[in-house]
Length: 184
Image 1 (cartoon, one colour):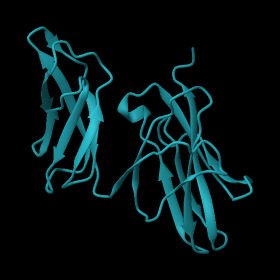
Image 2 (cartoon, rainbow, N blue to C red; image 1 turned 30 degrees about the vertical axis):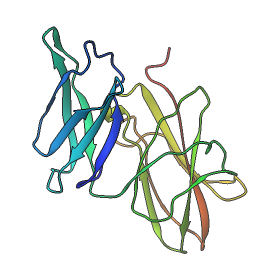
Image 3 (tube, rainbow, N blue to C red; image 1 turned 180 degrees about the vertical axis):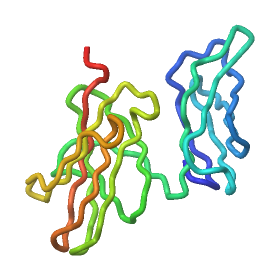
Image 4 (spheres, helix red, strand yellow; image 1 turned 90 degrees about the vertical axis):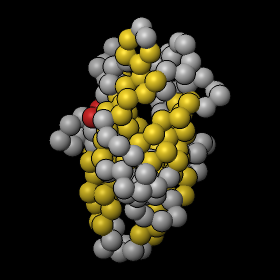
């Protein structure tokens, strides 16, 4: 979530009884349970430290494994389906942007259209492995005809980190895809 905003998140672990208490490793990140079991409204202060923060849910019976919540300085967009094809990407109107999403099914691909000028750099990366996700991601950029222009599978970790410069003015599609990690 972006500094100075409130975002709704869904905890993937079971929380009985609802709601659990929440511990966060830094001030300015306040998890408030909603009436829907598993969902929290997270209030992020304008001065909350950007970057990953550890979060734990707990009750009288114990605590969850620590998970990460990332505070961003950039606007956050939610992935919107359907965006599975380079022919029907989600349009990203302004950069920089943080996009929160999820690949929901086997073979899912998420596509995002960005408009760039010739020579304009684009950096795209995924934060999944570093968040203890069971996802080994890949990124690629294709043109509007689906021709692959660049690809990255792993950066410094199993998460891709793609750096590219637009060869011409135009709309380009950034695609996110991946595999279960570790492989089963």
